[in-house]
Length: 397
Image 1 (spheres, one colour):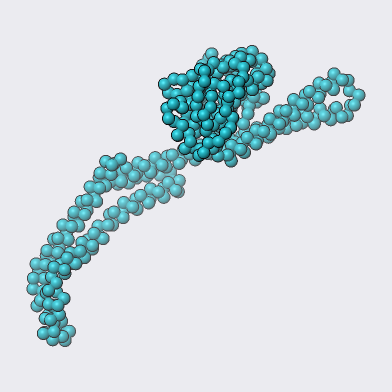
Image 2: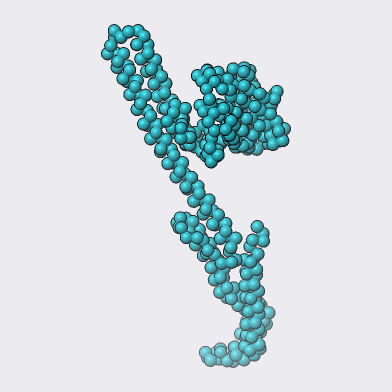
């Protein structure tokens, strides 16, 4: 970065040298041709305005003759200031070009930013800023479009279960003598539709919370092994809906620094996603262990592969795979986006891998022994309690 402005520094240096040389030259000429016999010229000037010659000579020696060094210094400084002020026009031109570049960014002009050679590093930097802002604007517009599309989908989906609930409840009320089996069937259908309606309403709240929340970590030391067992254990009822099993294969007593509640939400979101998209009568595997890069937690499940071009896109907020839009598994598209944000706040990474055989979500968290807990605390302030993940659960369900 120091060498980026070499041409600019050289240009300013040359201007300063030129101004200094010009001052010495002009000052020397004035000294030679005007000040060598300055006493006679001074006296003539004063006598021309009706001041006596004796008084004029007295004033000359009082103000000039006895203070020649000071007069010369002041004179050279005045000349240097005058010439330097004139040369500043070029330096001001530099500032005008920078101002023009900033105006180009603010006005969102489609024109490229161009500056003289000396300001090329600033031109490059402003171009990068303009490109970054444009990219962020497009991403914000895309996110807003996805959110609006999602709201439209959810609003449309709300009508179907609500209509069904009203229809079946109306039938139950209108036919009090309905056979018991038929009444039970209609009641069960109304219950299922009511549950789905509640899920859709929760998705609306999820969208609002994601837009308003500012995730703050409250890190503590926690047992990751027991936390994973507990999270898997709490999914026992959900797993039964698709006749799934979940196996936790983690090294004993993996200890990390992190926010227990937030990490539990990460694992919950990933596991919920795995349940939604895995094959019926299959197994979800959770593996955790230490490697050179930190502690790696891998969630694996069998199911339809994720297209390669969508492996990164699925972590964007409000993004859902196309088939999720028309299925009961489709949520608001926030679970993985929230998981990514929480993992990155912990100084870790999350990625998705998929092939014809299985899909894997890989979370990498810093090892507590690598001194990275300070980085986590810097995101969150003081630590407090929370879920510790120490409740024992079943490894096999």
